[in-house]
Length: 179
Image (cartoon, rainbow, N blue to C red; front, side, top):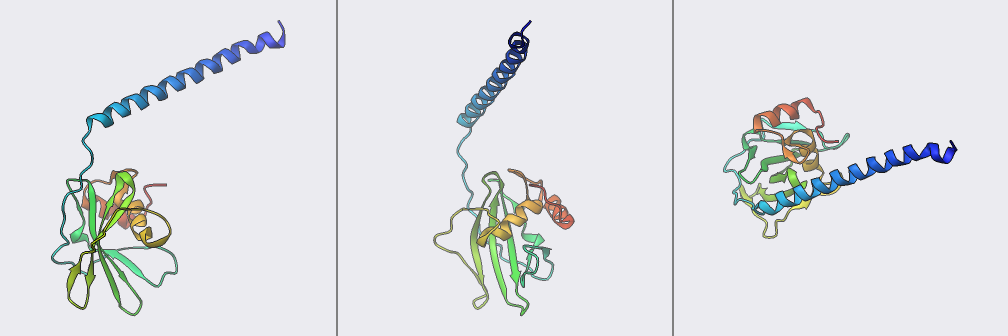
């Protein structure tokens, strides 16, 4: 038997494995497409900012080491909507005590965040921006705090990480769920 003929079974086996892998991929893609066709498009539910929030009992989290800001969410405002958006009031406090308070929502499935309202300290009222839109979560820029929240407990991959109680427990451990 020549070397060429001895290699033939290995090539046939490799071709068979590649064909099986391709068939599996195509079947999965077809099933996923069929499932997507049956689903209605995602619809965001209308939401209003909470009437009250507390800065005294914040569930804190670290956005970046050495930051002069302390971040936290008010546990009483953490909810999961019928549209699977995780909503919460987030507070960023400077070392001088200045507050930046946002009412936000994270959509785990698409890895996006939306700011629904900003707290106006001077008027003691929420200000709703007219052009609020979904933004991709990222490790840099304005969406970094939401990205950290999503990774540390609000989301588990592209799914919501259970109910608010479970999310808060996961946030306390500081363990990243997504990598």
